[in-house]
Length: 213
Image (tube, rainbow, N blue to C red):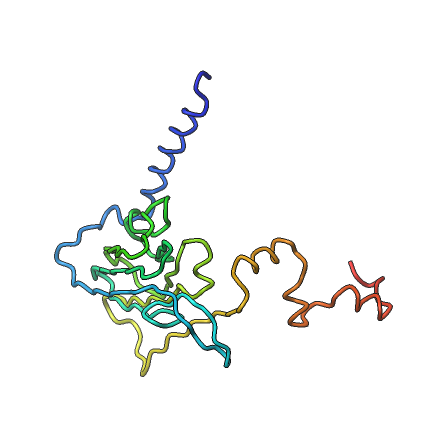
């Protein structure tokens, strides 16, 4: 093969085009005639207080997690995301079937949202259920860039008195990169801190070394 790298790049390019068409509303991307539901989200760095401790976070409209985005099946979701940070960001709409360009994975499907700029996502809603959205840039999700999505079906299927959206997450004051490094080292540091694992020194001190794997 005379130009192996060039051929490989061409194969990858066409493979990406092929996979991009799977599950992306190919049959129903039309925006005309849909009820429009519009949101504006502002991502910025803020101080938040959790458990009496104030920490640096990345907030959406001033909170962690971000606001619940509510739609009805057949809506046209227009979501304007403004980046007020000094670094680029992104939003991925996890679980939504949508046009590939608005999937929100920077440098793969969607341009990153540059510092000080706004990007508009336009998503024809062709499904119902509960989902979530989050940053796909570096480790920003761990600093607070996430929230929930609720999509009601076109025809009501359940009767209920009240709807409550519960988002389960955790928070650490450690930097996200430090957490990732510790996890990759497989040193059980976080299990030891939470006393869900026993440090080797304690195992030896108690004469239980033979019981460990």
